[in-house]
Amino acid sequence: MSNGKWTGIAEAARLIGVSQQALRGRVQRKTIDNRLDNRGRIQVFIREQDIKQNNNIDLSNIEQENNNVEQHQKSEIDRLYSIILGQQKTIDKLTDQLDKGQAERREILSLLSKAQDVILDLKEQKEIADDRSRKAIKIIKENAQKI
Image 1 (tube, rainbow, N blue to C red):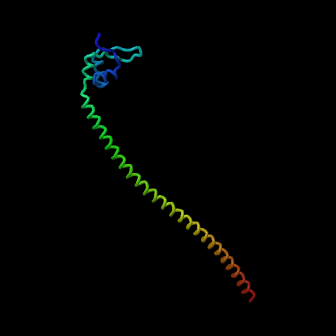
Image 2 (tube, helix red, strand yellow):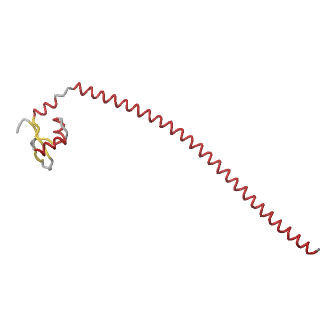
Image 3 (cartoon, rainbow, N blue to C red):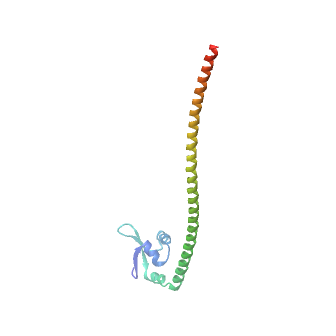
């Protein structure tokens, strides 16, 4: 076999313009010459004429396709950037709301602490009043027994 070369599946697929899966199918159907290399990988024989046919590609089509892809990518980048800006505005608003909520929470905790202090003071005052009431009742009872 001359006028060609032995090569791996990936390179052969690229050279002749087919997918690796299609090339493996040809190997299985035995419609392309193949062998195993020293490492046990499949190699196929690619004829020179097949390589030449594949490499005669109209570069203007490729260039146009690249331009189309590039334009699409730029549009996609602009679209994603716009989405990111919108999300950043939302994040900023939520951060502000969170800051306000945390400030309100601190204020509420402060008020609760003050309320607890007032409740403790009232309990102490009630205990003092109860104690005075008990003493007054005791004195009244003692005085009532003396009369």
